[in-house]
Image (cartoon, rainbow, N blue to C red):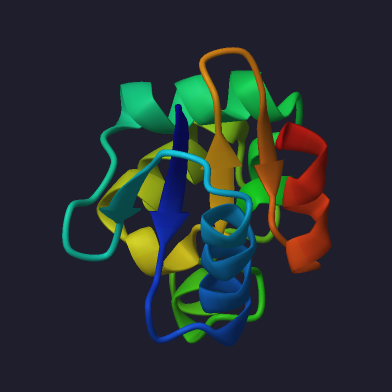
Length: 112
């Protein structure tokens, strides 16, 4: 089963979800702005993505600058994503073995 960390207001997130649904894949939808991830969940996603925390962040958001995260260490970045879910790049699609950021949405096809 796939899990999508989804923001329904985001066109890329909607497009990624549509690709999953068109492939008739069972999907668990987590609206991460309504149900924020805790630090352990953020770390798990980072492991599945095989990336550094900064690569999973929306660095152009005002909150990124306000929280002075530009040169922050990984623990600080992970805490910021848990405390300010808007900072998490979207969408993220995960299986129990791998995850992909759906930018562009076609990236998710590798999981299908």
